[in-house]
Image (tube, rainbow, N blue to C red; front, side):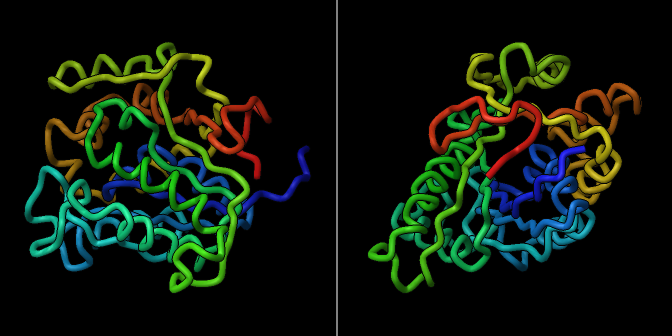
Length: 257
């Protein structure tokens, strides 16, 4: 039995449901082990229709209340009326907002999207990846964003990702509804976590995003139409690339600070 303490974990994702789909298993795993967990969501406003679904999903995962940057979704103008789209927001402003959350939460690990934009290449995924890389470094530097709180340097940054060999059946399912399937080289994956013990919790969190489950093309809806055994096979593994300090082997079966 591994007796190492499980580190605190903060997810930073573009949209409500990304947290459950991409890292719901490790969020549930860390919470079950007594670690602090949280999620920052870059798009959709607190009074939008998807905010209550996000709150319900985070409650299932034990990840606390929603932490919203409040920007608009690049493809949905109803997400944050009157606010900038994430992809149009000034970079310095967006980084400052995220630094505030990182310094307030003080996570040992931060998890975000990968550089290619998570399979489909959504521009909000790509932008969130870029903002998070800058914010994780800036959060530890006292002369950057002094108004954002006391400096805090996370020990590790991971990108949730899918490798060429690891995407499996999921790639075919996305192609069937006309979506891109962007993967990374197999060697770029440094950590693969078996989250099967928490697959039920993860799926309950995905189901909390009822609006996406009801639609045909979003991934929650695709997964909801699958037989349970096939769905569980897809959602029971989560892959990551450790980005600080650079892609490194570390422990191949769990996230480490």
